[in-house]
Length: 313
Image 1: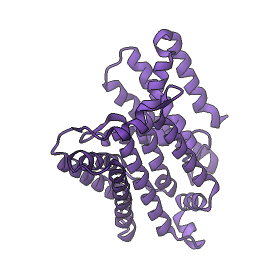
Image 2 (image 1 turned 45 degrees about the horizontal axis):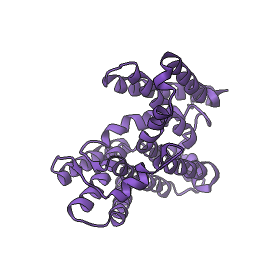
Image 3 (image 1 turned 90 degrees about the vertical axis):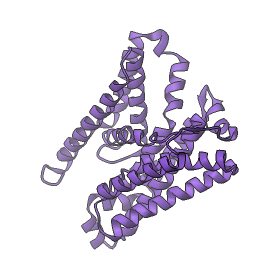
Image 4 (image 1 turned 180 degrees about the vertical axis):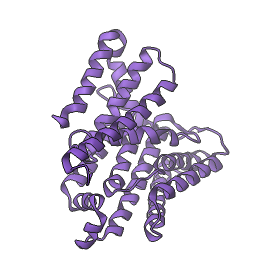
């Protein structure tokens, strides 16, 4: 029953808002907007899951996605580099940032919360430096066509790309030795180390994966908007963590999992869309995401206490 609570809650939200305003909420255009507009957040949430499974917090993913989006746009618009090469450079930058985070945390045994908070601030500063604190537009139409303009069943292709990434993350974390080792490390690093696991290497891999997937989210943002602006990625950090921790309560309760987090992203998006149709102000979105994050953490804590006992949760 626990594993189905969030999908059931999502259904109740759809029914509730649909009953209140069916002519606007229960339309293909509305659901196309909900599914298509959240692809960047969807992918960014996937970026969090491997380090979270390892027991690490990465607060730099939002700023990193913003830096990659700005890097791609600047290279394409101002330096006239082909968009394919711009995207590859952006992905390489994401990998490099992941290595930087991992080495800083592991080599110096530093708290990932503090390190990634610092590197995230650096990434945000570099984004402003690259853009001269301006929004840059005019990116190649080829990227926007593949990511956002082209549709299938009335939904932009980026939604389906996001689903593919979700399935890859779900398979890797659930069915591969990589995922099992990450789970073991996240549960107890000391036990994992005594069992012969290369804990530092596994944690480094988590940061690298987070950096790479964050870069994909940045490229998706460029393809969706055709532009890049300072600060955009940072605004997605709280919603991404809200979705990741809410996903901890469903499908595989007590375990960070891609499918649960994916459902959580669209549960939150549906709630925000319904509130906006009711005339809620912009600040309500921040209140909603913040409250959901607090509630999700409390629920996941209660589940852990019930499963493993108050002393070991």
